[in-house]
Image 1 (tube, rainbow, N blue to C red):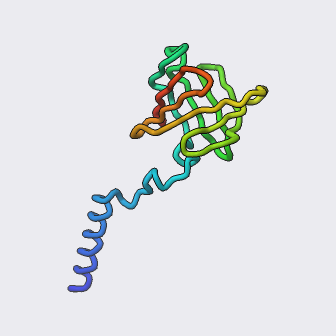
Image 2 (cartoon, rainbow, N blue to C red):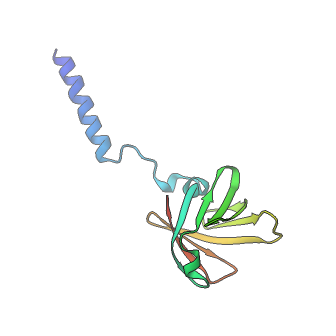
Image 3 (cartoon, rainbow, N blue to C red):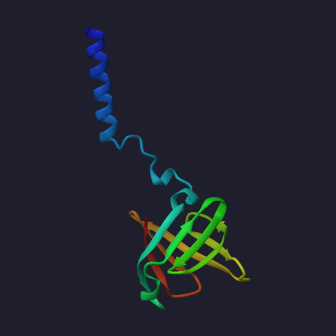
Length: 126
């Protein structure tokens, strides 16, 4: 009986310890750039040319380098051809030019700026 109570008590203590320490979550610094970016992100703040028109645009980072932007009914798809921890390069379908984006994380937000313009976007993950 004492062993059972000790085992239950140990499980409770371990559970409390894991929850208080974040439950063993993988820190974002341990993730690859692809893992950090993956998913849908929405522009919540923008500066530069056409700033207000860009708010609400959704950036989607998919599997195997798939990339798209969507604003209303307009969608552009492409492929990420280069990716590191500071930049990603996109080749959009039916366009010859590749677009280079600089990016960084500000807490839970993603800050992106296109090298060929003065636009800077702040995105939140959906």
